[in-house]
Every structure is written in structure tokens, then in C-alpha cells.
Image (cartoon, rainbow, N blue to C red):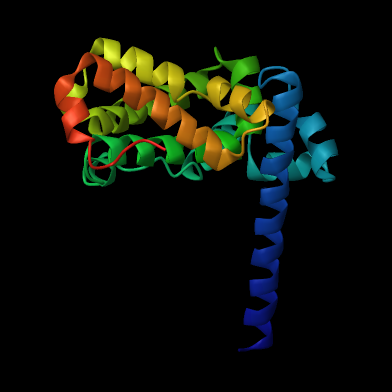
Length: 206
């Protein structure tokens, strides 16, 4: 490798690191103040860079907000509906989905605070619409023939960030929170649909 190529590589790495710091600083700022209230100057202070450096990477607050939320959405790794549908019977599908969503909730606690403060912000409504569409698709894949409006309502209430947090606050481990949520949801599904009960008989709930 030539000295010039080495220097260019080091510069590219430094630029990427600065951009990462700005994105992380912006996320933390949004969680505290909301997207609309966060200024480029406050993000620069938190990232320990000059305001001009933030503007070099992101020309305006809207571009920064879009970049932050898009980057966070890409790291969620929401399961693919086909993967969930192919996981096995109803119990196996519900367990896979619950485990994956609870993992996402654990990894996005800071993002949830941003959402709570900035739900009406255009960048947030765009990402929320994407997430809701993906969530509906994977939930339908998990429920299969049991999917109907009431099943969606009850499943969403149980496979929920607040429900997970409540269980863990009361001393359950992350795995135990998944186990108990799946047990509750499967009991409800069995109680309303005999076919769901027979289909999950070989996979009893924990």
C-alpha cells in the first residue's frame, strides 16, 4: 500500500468515526429534548465537534434526523415474515416473534424515549409507518390462520415494550419474560380456537 493510499484510508476512517459520534450524540440529544428542540449546536457540543463539522455531514436538522432514525431502523433487524412463517407450528412462530421483538425493545430503549418525545415529527412518522407495516406483516406470519383483528389486538398488547419492561422490573430475566408472555398468549389463543390448541399440543408452553 502506498503512503498516499494509507493516508486516505486513515482519513476515511476518521471521517466515519466523526459521523458515528454525531449520530450517537444526536440520538442522545433527541431522547432528552425531542427532535424538534435539538439544535445542531447542542448536538455538536455533545459529540465534541465544531458546529461546522455537523453541518459538513448533515446540511440541516431534517437531514440529521433522517440519518439518525434510518440508521437506528437498519439496526433493529426486524425478522422477515417468511422466516417467522417457516419457524414451525403456532407455538414456535409466536415464540420466535416474541423473542425477536423483546430483543429489539431491549436494544432500542433510547429510541423509545425519542419516539415518546417526537412522535409527531415528520422523520419519526415516516419511520413509524415503516415499522408498523413490518410489524403487522410479521405478526400475521406468526399467527397464521389464527390471525384476525382481535388476535392482533391481544397479541400486540402482550408482545409490547411496556409489558416486557413491567415483567423485567418485577425481577424476571429477559428469557423468563419471553417464556411467560408466550405462555399467556398461547393460553388465550387456545381458549378461543380449538385448532390452535391441537396444533400446539406437541410444543407445550413453558
